[in-house]
Amino acid sequence: MRIAIAAIGRMKKGPESELVARYLDRARAGGKPLALTGFDVLESTESRASSAAARKDEEMRTLKSALPDGVVVTLDEHGKSLGSMALTRELSRWRDDGRPAVSFVIGGADGLHPDLIAESDLTLSFSPLTWPHQMVRIMLAEQLYRATTILSGHPYHRE
Image (cartoon, rainbow, N blue to C red; front, top):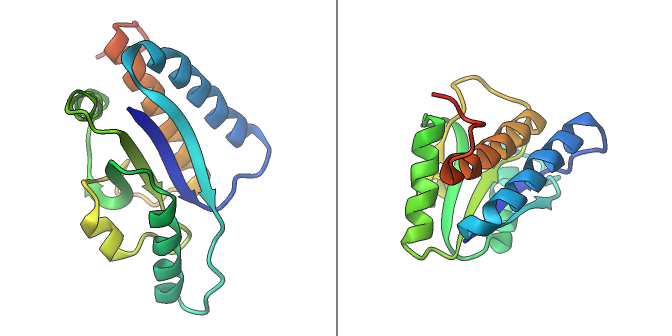
């Protein structure tokens, strides 16, 4: 099953993008024997529309056109809070159900369009706090790596 992170905005070179790359490289290596592949980041440019509603609409269309067929997980502070083990169980279930891909979707500065959230298979929250997009990518990349270690029995994750 292919794993993708679809995000509005591009990360600049620096320690944040290096950390995302490091976790995703680890996830790729650990995911191969688990039938988890890709761990790609699909970046789309931010909309320049004049209103927040118009920006969300344009960004939703851009994101939807980039997503592979499969499970869509939107990230939003109002979403469901899952622990690492629960997220890993979801990934494992989707893989075992033969789902071709899981896309984790991170919105722009205005957030995600409500229609995209409503259409998603799961809306995930890392906290009720609002996080910078760079931090969300880092946390998501780490959780994806953590999921591969949990599934493989590696001692990285501790309960």
